[in-house]
Image 1: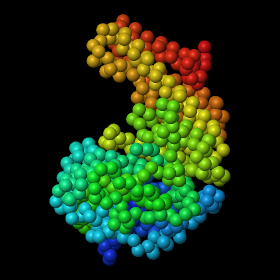
Image 2: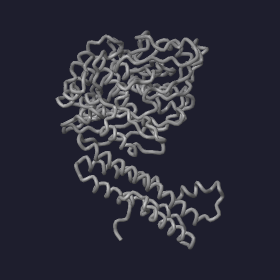
Image 3: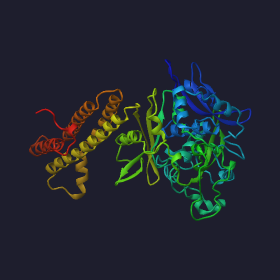
Image 4: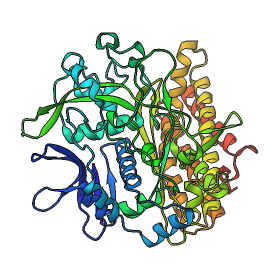
Length: 527
């Protein structure tokens, strides 16, 4: 995990598991890429020095999110959190020190050993006895490698024997608990003495929706921004499967669910039942060479206090939770984030509190796992500026910008169809989709428009007039769409039919962009 240190001399840092040979304990830690050699800093120091660390970055966006969730869970478990929205505002504005949580972590006697025989960190000890017989390669633990938990989409074999360093295994385990997808695990449940449902994996808490964090200039700011006020007991810190009554896997039938008992429970839910087998790496450091990944805790429907960052969007005239989509970039839904701040219909949630800020200018970071029927495809994430008092302008710009981009994409489809119909007057039905794709400049348009969209939001956040910014954005998108179509048409031969197809496609695009139904920013403003 890479961390950017604030100040004039940025340094690279990484979150790892620090192996202490004196008591064989795996504890969360930070590795600093110092000069001239690599040094290690414990998780206690990470919390104590959170305001001197700019941000944390994992190997993937999902890993970063999972580690932020873990740190938030530690703060709640330490009972170091604001109890009211007013107290939260004071914490954020005056930068409440996180040292008390660091002290708690230093004194806490919980099990931090990733390979403890009875209480392995983040795991189910009941599976340990099955590791030698039924365990598979450590790639099964890594979402990006495990694929559908049966056949890895990067073609790694389940029994690939290359061990995984312990720190990487810990991060992968946290990511599984947070984002794991619902599939069938490759576990012979009956032979292991478990009922058949033990093979059925449920989608983890954030596995099917977009998670939004408010990011500050330091790690400490980020943690305080995302500490939702809580005026009750924080609930259970989930360190290992045996620390509390959990889903017992004792009978078949309907899924066994449980309610949350507080925010510490929320941020450390064990969404998978996991076991890891230790091995010594070639460099003498600890590693993992075999794993078992089965179903974990299944939660009841979460109440509003546990959905502080949830973003709602309209689908078929109904509000639904924002989920990653292959057909839409996250920036196309950014207006929903700003709407959540501007409308504040949920009362005291993340967005309602952000609107209270006076001297902070956070970013909104949205992250999710794009999957198809439980098969992970890619991590999607994006960042959006936020300035208290300008949420209405940001919302308007993002709504208009998304509308402009969507319309331009449709116009390019129409132009591509015109080029295809002239270039291929008698096509076979099976050839038509490929012929349309040949002339469709949508991919290039979306790529270029995404960059310009973020530039538009930055300009609004900086105080530029919203109408003028949107107008410039529309003109830029028009130029991008025109260039994208022309680039696609260059493959046409310079003959009569090719020239006719080119001219008709360009004319069709212009007609669509100047149509009365087109968004005003897209229309030609000069005679």
